Amino acid sequence: MSFFDFFTPPDDLNLNWFFRPFIRFLRLLAAGLAVFLPAFYVAIISYHFYIIPINFLMPLAESRAQVPFPPIVEVLFLEIMVELLRESASRFASRLGASIGIWAGILLGVAAITTRMVSCVSIVMSMVTLIASLILPAYDLGFSVRILKFAALFFASLFGVLGVVVTASVTFAHLITLESLGQPYLQPLIPFKLGKKY
Amino acid sequence: MEDRNQITAKQLGVFILSAQVGLGVIGLPSDLAKAVGHDGWISILSAGLLSTLVTIILIALLRRYSNQSIFEINRHLFGNILGQTINILLILYLSFSMVAAFRYFTEFIKLFTMEATPEIILALLIIAPTVYLSWYGLKPVARFSQIIFFILFFVLVLSLLTIKKVRLTFLMPVGAADLTTLGQSIIPATLAFIGLELTVFLYPYIKDKENTLKWVVSANLCTMVFIAIIFVVTTGLFGENLLKMQVAPLFNLARYYRAHT
Image 1 (cartoon, helix red, strand yellow):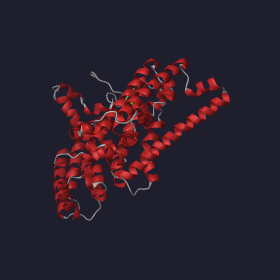
Image 2 (image 1 turned 90 degrees about the horizontal axis):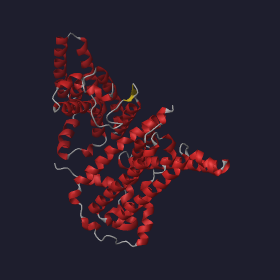
Image 3 (image 1 turned 180 degrees about the horizontal axis):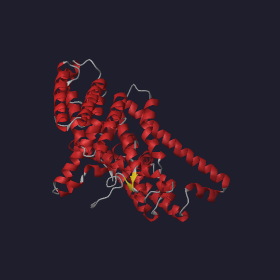
Image 4 (image 1 turned 135 degrees about the vertical axis):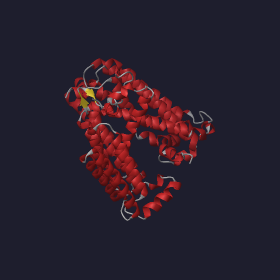
């Protein structure tokens, strides 16, 4: 079991060779977004807002100006709400769970925007994070992604983009030190190997 | 314990590449422009060839004491007292170069991203991945340094994006500097190739010693080509006189590029 096996479930092998890399890179992108998107958002909004293009900065500033909280509180509120929703949806019976998720999501999102507790861009960001973390196939990976998201968020709120980079490199370092059954965990990428794996 | 310190010759090459292309490359073009002007690429090439020669001599010498580290070789050659003194000097050199590079890195980050954060906190944050990796031994460190290829790729893409604005007339009178200034400028150019001496310390940990020469020399040549490309692009973009005034030309190269909006 290596890291990239999480992104290639066995039924992918029945797919066309042309679609398989596409969907694999989509899942890798989803994992990256699910961990680092809220952290990058907080870091850029609170420290490095000058890298946003000016055409986008103005609507962003307009929607941010009505919110009384600092970005980290806003994003933390949204992320905790999303985690609560996910957890409650998995507790209920399946049909009820889906409808509760939809109703709570729509109602809470619209109400949070109209009461100006959160800005619209934060809602977009946190929904993208939720969708990206729902794409990941394995429950174990999803769990560590959810924990890492909060760690990255914490360091991003303290140190900006540098905190995100340090979190990423500590995570990467940890993945490098891991071995499963004597094989390196990031097998085809880090001891770089070309060729057939199956 | 034995196993996690063993590396292959290829990993050693990558490790040396990542040690050479470090922070030095950020400030190197302006140092060279101060020393020789627009002919810096000649001194980079000659420094690269010189350091390749040094590599070949080092590895040929190390081959005679096949499985010993430099510390044992020193004691073997110079006797106990003198050998241990040289060993202590070597260890001091390694610690000093580590601390100097780390301090430079901290200062750089403080200058360009986090102006108000105190340095000690930045330093504690930055050193965390290093401590974590070196806790687990040499092999993960050597594996982690493969990340250098992403950085090289990024910088090469950046120089490709700005290549339209590069004016070759800035480089044009080739060999305008006389030979003595060229010869003196090899010294700042050689600073970019520091990292080579790690071969001496890591040689006993290599699994396949017969491939060492190949990989270390190719790492060295890779560094040479990369730094020469960076120098040519920054000089062609900013010109010699503007380059002399900059602190971090590579950083300014990244700032210079604007995407089409």
